[in-house]
Image (tube, rainbow, N blue to C red; front, side, top):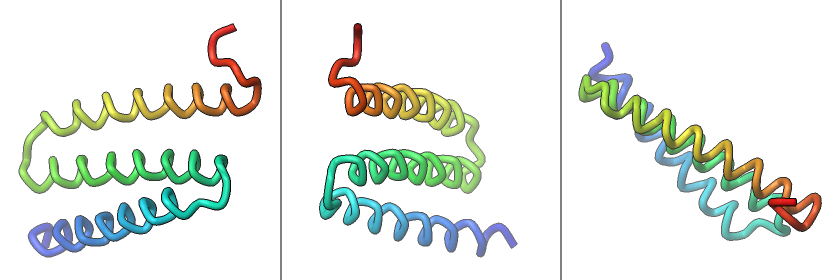
Length: 89
């Protein structure tokens, strides 16, 4: 059953990434674009995990963990910049 479900999930997550990129480009203001970028890295994370399950490789899970940490740190840095205008005080 996973032979049918995982390609379907990969296709739906790819569509989600495409729609998020459109929102990133067309976002009306900066907070919307930051939120779209945050959603984009979460969707990319899900794609990498699904691809790792499909191939049966544990290497993709380690890459997904690194992307999650970098995405969280970058989201916090951008939010701090938007609120205060300075990242490092």
